[in-house]
Image (tube, rainbow, N blue to C red; front, side, top):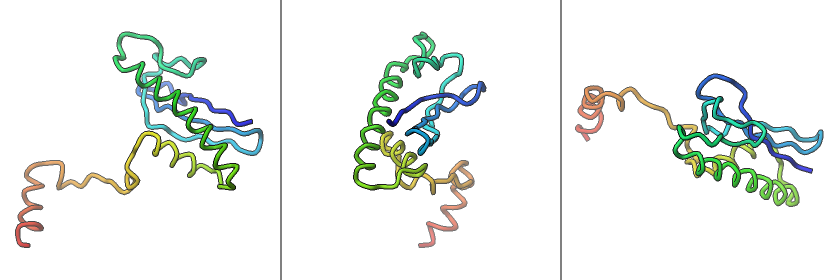
Length: 131
């Protein structure tokens, strides 16, 4: 039977919440969700953010994380029955899809020309304006 677990791997603030999917001894996957929390506000037994006033959007995040667990289990069952390979890439793609992240997110990088106005102006004059 497949199981899911949300956990933190560090006590440093902020800590990334990890998603773990296991299915007996055959499958044990763990990937980052890229949702961050202060470890003192994380309830590891209930796998959610504690009810503290400091975190204004805790209910929305907890709800989203609970839905993530359900969605991953549903997708796991469906994809397993359809013969898809369940691996770390599969899990990572499911999490990105759930959080509606862009598919090209890996290729997105900050160029120095986009950070400072003067750098962007020089880039625009050299690259865009002559065209």
